[in-house]
Length: 324
Image 1 (spheres, helix red, strand yellow):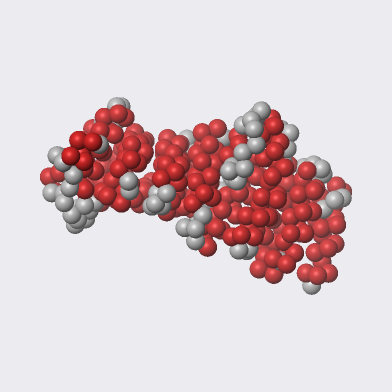
Image 2 (cartoon, helix red, strand yellow):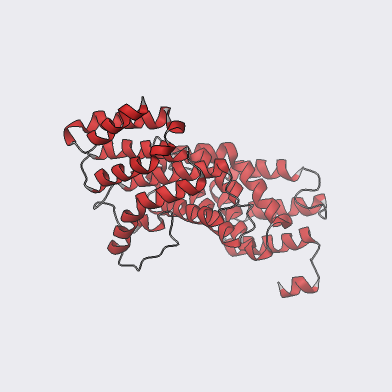
């Protein structure tokens, strides 16, 4: 059936008079039959890219088309996702870099430059953002560990979105909880650039709790998991060179989620041997109170975290600590 229907639908995409019917039909096919579509993926992407660049459809239909492509790509293997995604978004990256008057940068695989302009000269930023988040979430579902560069770029993209166009996180198809969970996973990567980018994502996310309802809800329901991951890193799981970045997460939590943080800290610190077996209950309580008291001086929080990580690692008072 797909063999007979799909060519008709793809042909109709080029007809403005059939815009709504053709795009909505393709979206339905890609949503309900995505696991049958890999052999047709390259053709669907090529034709969709052509009609998008020609601006045949109105903004709402462009959004539907991007959603269809998100369904389609999510059913592919990681390598195929990246190949097709790269093919689809490369023209927009080139336009953005030209508009931003910046030299091409092939490392920006996931649209970090997307916010360099207001997006009036190409397919809406929102549609591209939702497409990229959709397919990147599918990569996380398959296992992101072999793709730290993708995770790094994705976290940078999310941070820039929060900084420049936070209303993107209000989009109906934006799964804020899934993005939050991806961030927690990414904090545990061994690659320092990936961890830095992820800390940057959370330090941009947390200040949006009060103004973006989906963000506030996700943080209030899952913030304890973030706190636990940050403390695990401080307790010895991450390089000491990254402590300032984790300190910024604690500072943001304290500044924007103070009521919850006091509860979460009490609960996680009650765990035996957490975040380090070297700590006494008194040391954990002192650290908690120091963090909760400091809501203004970020530098002071970084110093507190540095001292605490040395205690966790058994390095306090050693030559290593002096060098640190």
